Length: 503
Image 1 (cartoon, rainbow, N blue to C red):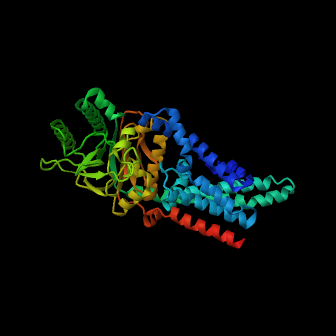
Image 2 (image 1 turned 120 degrees about the vertical axis):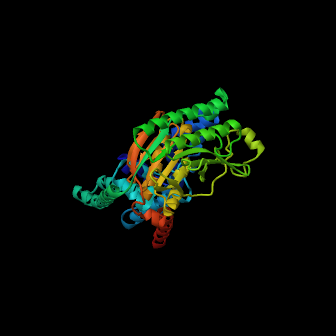
């Protein structure tokens, strides 16, 4: 988090010494490759584990894809070059236009992993609160401006021919700018935390239990044990951990991870499947606590990744609602029609077959004691974009429930990145979040982004935590949506054009 404020300075310094646009593009291309290989090596290992390719091939694919995964670096560098960065007003315009179009490029070309450098500021409890104004992209913009200020300070102090006093005076303006940005972010966060703490003291509380059984690779389990024994073992583990959670405290809600029930629920394909459906329903009825869990759903031959909302039965009938995952990961879950043919599937047997759901949804759950809870469901990749959570909260959602399966990340920082990205959905909407994953990291997240409870990667755990429920505080992100990226794109283009017109 600390490195982020100055981490781009060496790269920016090299860019400013480049003598041509071609050199700027080459330097930025290399920087994108270095960045991807340094920050996302776990993604290459995940590609290798999922597709069966050799790790060397997966890393080569990752390196070659760097400009597509991180195009904002090239945009930023070119804009700074076209702005003819220099001293005074010209340098300021170039820095602002570059930072604005960096963020605008990320918005216009959605990132595959939903990442932006602003996510690094999650480590600061105060600074991250500004995400309810402009999201993670707003924090990225602030980081870039402080890096530009740090570069200007370094240049001012390194001017050999100027007297020391003159160098110091020249460095004061960018130093004051950086200090103002940091003070504004910290001050806003301090005020917001105090306000949210007061709201939390009077808000109704919700007690949630999360099961993380550390079971993954259901297909391999089914091949080794047979489908029946594999599902039997998965359910037994989750029943046992659920009872452990129920014994810790009275619960309002139980949550299991994405696709934890690796078949359809409510429309069984076999007699054994119908028996498993009834067993889950009996468990929910006996516990008296509603259950949210991941399963499959079918409709007219199409299959969906779904979240099932199952309440204790009041009349002996099996009644439930489901949410279908809206944002599917490219290729592994959803294949474009252009590539979806028998020949391609023979070459790439791991391609996905799911269809996307209709979009954001709010599901009402009857909690013990008669209270109604309105839930915004998200499944895995749904949490990468702010739009789904914002739309659901606008419709009255009081709690975000996220189901995920991060086992394909294999190893590394992938699960942590996904957790942080998900936490920003709570920061932007000021809604608590209950997040259940198969192998970690499961967590309970407060409206301030604080992790109230978490289970580490490959930990077998039953988490129980109490979070504020209810509508919570309003935010600019709720009022305007994910606005900062489009505004930054337009403002950056105007500023770049104005600079060239002035010259």
